Image 1 (cartoon, one colour):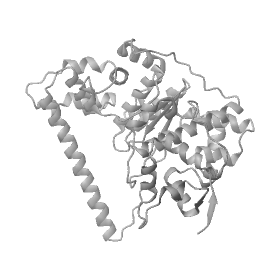
Image 2 (cartoon, rainbow, N blue to C red):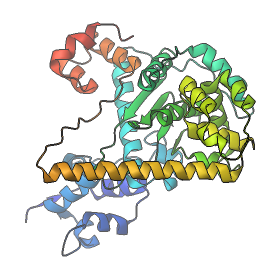
Image 3 (tube, rainbow, N blue to C red):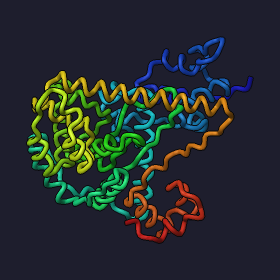
Image 4 (cartoon, rainbow, N blue to C red):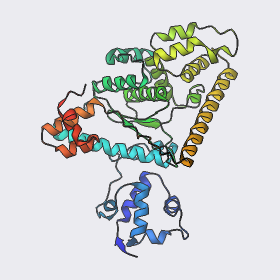
Length: 391
């Protein structure tokens, strides 16, 4: 079996970065093997190519990364996990990989932009948790002035566009539905001005709320990666002061003047909130889900905990039934030999990202091939993206 000399320090760097033990590494790379890989086989001057490929499959760094003899500094500038060690404790491995991947993307984007003299400077001022989140939401909404779109996907695109106007770069990541381990985050903020959100194909209101919640973290200038759990909003002890501030900010940014109508809704009995046409109407006018609106009513004690959790259980049951239905349909198609033509969703491209690469191309920093590669577009669409307005 062929062996190569590798840089053990780079493996140790990744273990520190992902807060992974040696035992966990060996367990993960030994999956499916009759004879598990041992520490002595990894921490040696030379390593089997097959073992190195298993390590690379886990971290997705490329074999050359582990062969490079140069050291990597564990500096705060290198990774959010070195800046905020507590951040990684709540994230599973796949979530950590996503955060690390997009931080590297951020470095690449900013480096290209600097060479083209494209500025990513922060425009909006920094706020603190001492500022009133409701007033802040109204102020920021007036600055961004997003045009309301009835379609949730169109409204999400509008939000990404108006944030781009304020030099806030929003990026989406798409998770493949067949992945064994799902990421346990919905979004995160990376200094100075990058927001990353998970594509929520079926739950667009959740993605919109996550985006505005992360905008709150941008305003507070606080890096974080998290999962939106509405139940936590009803328990003041379950989240930090900053999390409560960002939840309040996101709610008031999206609800706007409709908050008054929500507060005016009267409930005759304990079940009426579950089927209220007023709740449905406000949801359609604000892109706040019924869950978010009922969570708000529970926080203000407008509905009982029993009513709230009855609703939550109904939502969970509906989701489970839908998932079971989709699973049965997939299995039936497989038995009948009907191919599945599901298309992988394409992330929304921020106009700010397109503008940065347009300038980089026009300044000669990148060529046509690199331009298409960085934006993940086909070559026939080059002219459309390279020269047309990104608005």
